[in-house]
Length: 83
Image 1: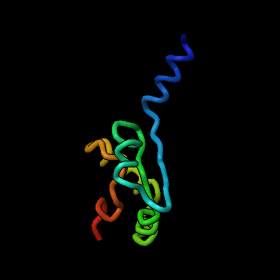
Image 2 (image 1 turned 30 degrees about the vertical axis):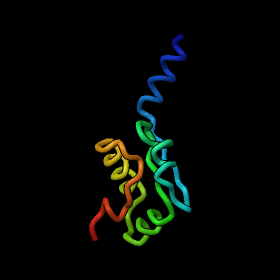
Image 3 (image 1 turned 135 degrees about the vertical axis):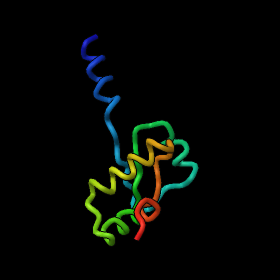
Image 4 (image 1 turned 180 degrees about the vertical axis):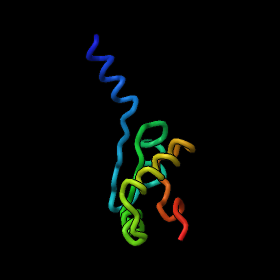
C-alpha cells in the first residue's frame, strides 16, 4: 500500500514532453493530450526555439505554464514568445 501511495505522489507532480518531428493532428492532440500532464513540441517548435536562441528549460517552462492555464498540450513556441 505504501508503494502505491509513493507512486501516486510522484506521478501527481510528474510532467512529460512528447516530441514529434512531423507534428500533431488535431484529433491526435484531443485524444492524447487533454487533461494529462504532458506538453507537446514539434519540429517547427524546435527550429523556432533554436532560431530564437531560447534555453530549452525556458521554452519548456513556457509551454508547461500555457498548458496549465488552458489545458491544451500544444502551443507553438512562436505564439509563446514575441520577436
